[in-house]
View 1 (tube, helix red, strand yellow):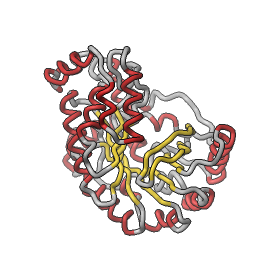
View 2 (cartoon, rainbow, N blue to C red):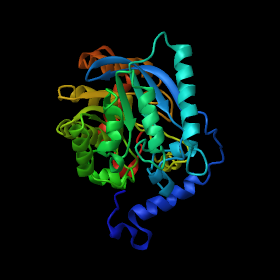
View 3 (cartoon, helix red, strand yellow):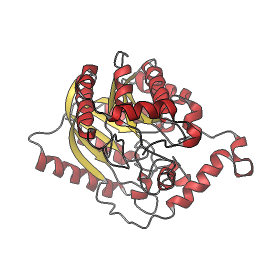
Length: 358
């Protein structure tokens, strides 16, 4: 795993201070979870370089992200849903896969062509998912068309990817890049690696016939609405220039439990992004040579990306329509009086006095 430079540890400053705060926040967790049950599973549709697929999304319940256990990202509460003890056995992880296949059989007319597997950490980290399990999962889904697995760039290694590509699966590595701006990634997200490491991971994946899907975070803490929007536009365009990166999934930040973002939210120091900002980024980057999608979690709620409450569902439907068709004209079909409030916030909000409006 990459190491931040020594100066961030000086007198409890920088990343060391972030991690100390995060460990204290995460210590509030008191829930327990069954190692034989997945965290979540659902059916959906997804846009890929090969077209739109029915998809089965699986979030495996592992021992949790290694970085999150050290302190971790300011917005991510997924480690709080992880199994205690730091590891889950091969047998229990495969029981989770069986539960997901049962869910698919009960709710879909036919098997999904696209499988997406996440751990809320790194699927390619063998502390979370042993090599034996990774290989068994590759064999289990060998009859599907395409698979996406999630990993931090540290763990992206060609032999691991080849477990999937040699099965004939079109394979994508989903990397939680969050932003193409190194300073924002470190200071606002508290993530340790640099953009160059993402580029290295994309090159390694490309050499064995796999692609990369970059996950970006819209409006991490400490950025104003306009700063966040500008950062996302720049990040999408920078990802589009990385050979092998064919898709960007822009995730608007939502307020998850046991996170620094939640503490800021309760202290009136954070508001999730406006859905209008999400739409603006999608519309303004639609001409880039890359698929750009977004799925605002908790849209319309105070803890998720939202507008005024009256137009949230309409804007969300437009975003979903854009995801599948990549046609920016869908946003011309939605409007609301609250756009004027959003425009005023975008123009006047400063990072030292957020949020200007809830």
